[in-house]
Image (tube, chains in turn orange, cyan):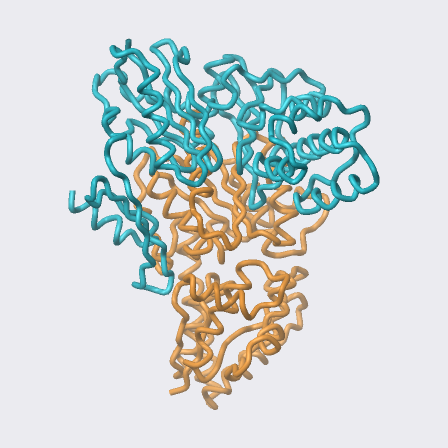
Length: 316
Length: 322
């Protein structure tokens, strides 16, 4: 059985259900790297290009972990997942950065996924990637449809305002009367406990109900960002902004935490836009957290505790 | 006399205060931590003990600062609070209508905005510690001055020079450059004060609604040069409270009073604790690839606490043991 390795980093957090089902139905053995740990980060920092942000460093560490354990590595070049919108420039360069920086890689399956245009060749890609594992066109198509179905089910968990249990965040059981905080940040930071220093779990332990961008329907996000004078063509940034705008209107959300990685280009802009919007439109408190390679958690704990005190005293 | 003890264990200083029932400061100690928080704390408590009348009764203890958890374990605290809340509580107690609190400490800086005595917004410096007390310390040492001489020099300036405040490494090269051009030290020091203030307002203070009354506290508030630079930049009068360098500890003491109100008992172990032997040991846990640094606290040879592990297996082992 052919083994395909998928790093537990970056777009894993959004698409793993689709990929897992697709490849398993094709008869491949899917191997995910373990949750991020110090060894993975250290290895990633060793192999990565200089200017990368922390999540990309970690991605390289995951690839390094997988490289001797699999026959193929799945590292798609995600150029765009929505019409006339783009992912982040670093996502677009992932397969190239991998092959030039890590030696002795197994074969990298890195199809270019670009849905900006109507004629996006998605079926051609499904066909090409599927062909590596099966020559049966019916099986490839069926695997894809099953994958899409699981992907939709997975997304529905988020849309039901809960956090998928695959991310193993404990203490999430919600009681009424908790504080509600919207946590705005990329899913590859939020749901990676090592990168976010267990932010979501720490909030849950404080009896806070967490709301994230993934819980807002894409249609709603698009509607919210339409108030901006110019269209935002960075897809991830648009999702963060749109959901923050949406949450800012919800009376039950008492505060915002915006978490971003040091050196993230698009976030430098969105963080500032979100902050400005919250301050001018409805004056809800916001805490900005920046993550980097620090291992000391004292700083982040102090900020979370102080923010919690602030909200508690306001809400009463 | 009934008093409340507040302890603020920071990166650079360890501050201990005693306040009475009406929040008057009875004793205040500002001690350099010197990388030995436990020893400093013990020495501080011993010194405090010699300064207070026999009939003094400690009714509650609060700890804050980056070493708050360690301090709480050692003295037996009734409340352990983050330094933002502690500073805000103290500021609002000293100047009830305070709106903005500028706080610059050894390795962090923060801004707190209050409305009607309640924190409405705050920010701390992010990954960078540029423009905090440690940087001033370093530059004073480079010029061969004590920090006290350094802070007075800025007042003698006639024409402060422009220094890049964005990053302390760049600031240092700028300072060296200006000094080689022949600018006087007082002009350079004053320029540095302005750079630090600019950096603070553009980073920590960015987008914050800074309105009077403004309080400036933390160890760096001892620098009149910085206070003047703030007044020039903001166009407002800056108040440096009498106890500016121990405000966190005062806040912790006030919070301790709130925590014990109505239950007439405290976790305080008493001043005898200075006779106990506190030792910390650390080891790297090899249980998983995270290789956490686990710290163990021994009191008189008995293992009393562990922390530092991400998975809590060592921490829990101790808590379950009682």
